[in-house]
Image (spheres, rainbow, N blue to C red):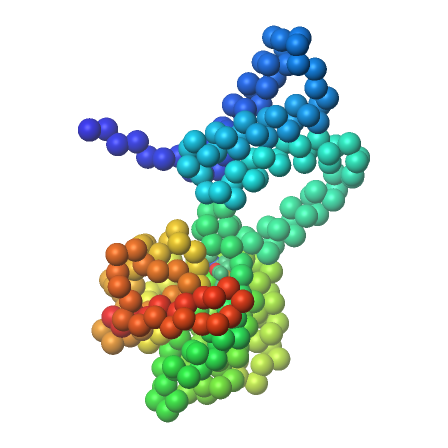
Length: 252
Ligand SMILES: C[S@@+](CC[C@H](N)C(=O)[O-])C[C@H]1O[C@@H](n2cnc3c(N)ncnc32)[C@H](O)[C@@H]1O
């Protein structure tokens, strides 16, 4: 049987917008009964795109994006904002989020409760190494390095601005960590005792494959919020923080 690979979600989103736009343009051209303003037609296009997204089982928040995309374009054109603002916001988003369209892991930060729980979990006496996969602005490892002088902390971050912030933060820290700019998938996990990940549901299966291949027996994989499908954790620690997150721990 031939298996079709589902196209990239951005291609699907683009096709949905184009198809719904084409349908609405045809409707405007071939009939004279319904007379709507440009904005009203754009709302109709939004509803159609949203419906298509629902039929194609895109996540719910994509339906909202499809609903608002074209009406927002019409509104924005009407207010006549300088295109330089769009360039500015695009550059800001690229600096903050980097290649999120590819990694499917946006930036959000671990809570103080995560910090406190890890602090109580990490070894107090013997030396250990800890890596934060996608370390964001470096807050977690900087705070842990303060309370655990016996640990070697490494953060790997791909997005430019969070990486720069972590580097700056590290310059003034009394217990500096190692901060690298790059892709954690290229890193060998065998050098770490603890691997910490706060990512998204998308890469968890691949993360498990890499971790179980490379991590040493006895080392610890910790995931904030996101479980690994089909692999029961050795421990779950529910946290009472703003997102009601849970820490999942797997002992390799
Ligand atoms: C949810 S944030 C977590 C930030 C930080 N670890 C914390 O707990 O506060 C995930 C981060 O991973 C980064 N990231 C995603 N994929 C990456 C990759 N392949 N290599 C390096 N960083 C990545 C993103 O840019 C984002 O800053």
